[in-house]
Image (cartoon, rainbow, N blue to C red; front, side, top):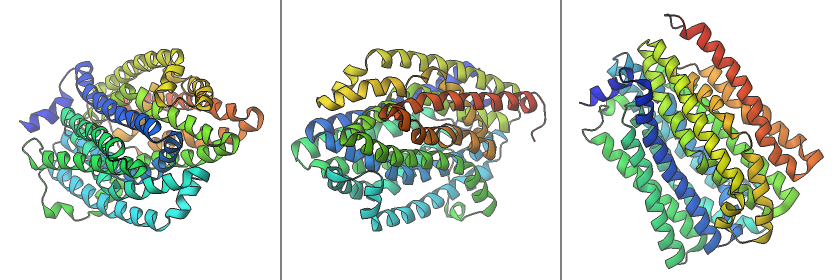
Length: 451
């Protein structure tokens, strides 16, 4: 029964299949994003606006370490999807075992390093002045649970690679709801402040891990590994590393961006500007959930059919995914252009933050309708195992364009220049991705030979 499920990736109509994969992914991302959003609203109203800024300082560090698990997960899941597509279950099982071992070894090492240098890392990411102490409190507690989060993120991608999107959705929903309940208990009832917010987050990671562990031990998963699969296999580790490096680089760039943005905005506008960025950042994670869901749903379909050498289905998957994602992105754009003031008021009633955040939000989301091409285009190369193009396209938006722009534009436009950098980098990276995706389809997917 489980085997039939993964084979559906190569047989069902593309439109129906993409919806079947993307809707659960979107719902899972929505619930997770709502969790982050409501968590920020709780923190802002129950602790204060400085607490929002403190969490924003910690996020890039904890997310980067957790992204090690996601990188290993996505890199390995690309191998698993293609292995299942070519009916190579032995390689799929060995890959999954290697993913588990790598995730534990790498994330625990980084957490130890992060705790040892806590007093240097927190200020480096913008935790200065009144932000330092609450950021340090949150950072220490959340970091304890980050290896568990990394295992969850790795496992979630493997569940999707098996063609089980509903279970991947549940894995994201349960901890999100649990985090909100723990927020109410620890912050509002027990009055633990920042420590309460941190323990609620760590507790949610544990809930997620328990569910994912149950999935792989139950009959729902076709990947039944044993201890022999946990031993590292050099060729598989190398392939996981090459493909996972794309995701890791993407998250590393995000973390570097947070570091730079927090420091640049602190110099330009102090805690108020960092808080505005934190609110806009939450909306970036929340508002685009259906677009990210389409991207997540796209990955296993493209990878499976590429492994099965069904190139017409791969092309159709690309076109359909871009159409769906572009439509959703346009609807999101319209909503955010109309209601930024009302959205900001959900987080805080601070007058200075209410003044700065809405125009910033409009600038940040100004190019949203076109981002589908960039997201799907870079995801395609990763799905089919082409690590170098995937890496370069991943770097285009934030690495090649955004980071240079946030140094150049503020010299002429002040804080406004920081916000202007978002849509400009979106447009430039989309043009680059569109060129290489078109070239790939024309040269490789119109043939019957995989290079």
